[in-house]
Image 1: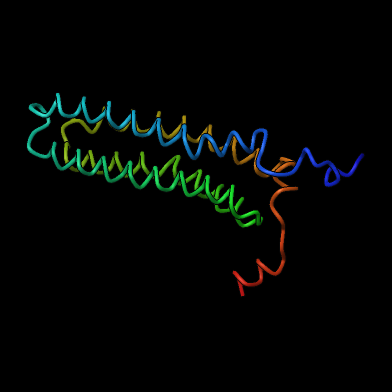
Image 2: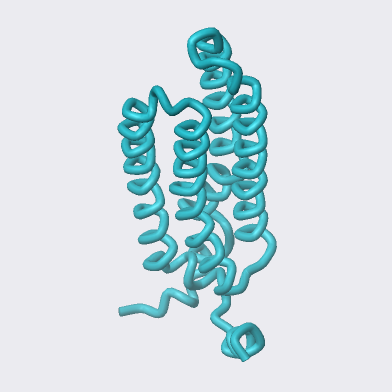
Length: 165
């Protein structure tokens, strides 16, 4: 078995790792924004049925998507700029947070503001969380097993000691 650390093509942000950076930095935030615009348009149309809490929910949706977009861009930046193994851990935690927290927070908020449609929301939230979890699982496995990731992000015992000491 050859030593993959000597292969320069397996270093740096490229290949699937580069694709992950593009997904986190551009494609993911764009998808979040377009999906939120569509959801808000639908919510605004249903505003007559949903009641007086609709404007509050719309404002909350924008705040939630802004936080999610910022988090996603931060993860992309971290992978590009900080080539320490802690970046991989931060990105894995961030991927799972982005996969589950916005959906959970949105579902809880919507069920508080619109208790009459809780049943439909729960099913939709579970489906969304399941789809996001598949993506987070795939990227987590990639980050943990990839030779490119292992060669790009330095495992520094001093860093671990500084953080946990």
